[in-house]
Length: 119
Image 1 (cartoon, helix red, strand yellow):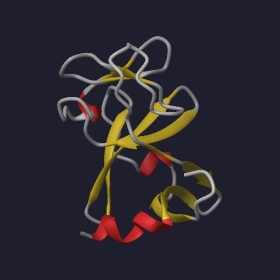
Image 2: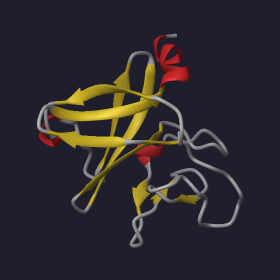
Image 3: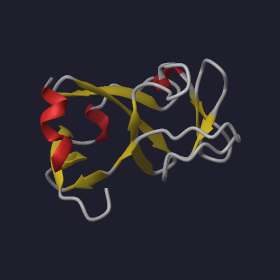
């Protein structure tokens, strides 16, 4: 999203308002789009709802010891910082900027894709 305008959407007042699963993952809906939100240590991340390989639900996976999100279907691992596949299969998991502000937690989408979340 470098160089693109970002449209921010509030997803929660604070992290306690997110419906976290025991694995530190949650699914939030922004318009018609589902997004996986991750609590890894003291940081929050956001990524695609489904794995780019076989559409496994990322929130059903887990966070490994190195802080990567792991797909529950084939155990493909992805960096939460940039979406790169770190287990070598060559896929890319879409990630989204997430900001914790005084006014709440916000997720960012490229302005050019903003209307897509309402389809």
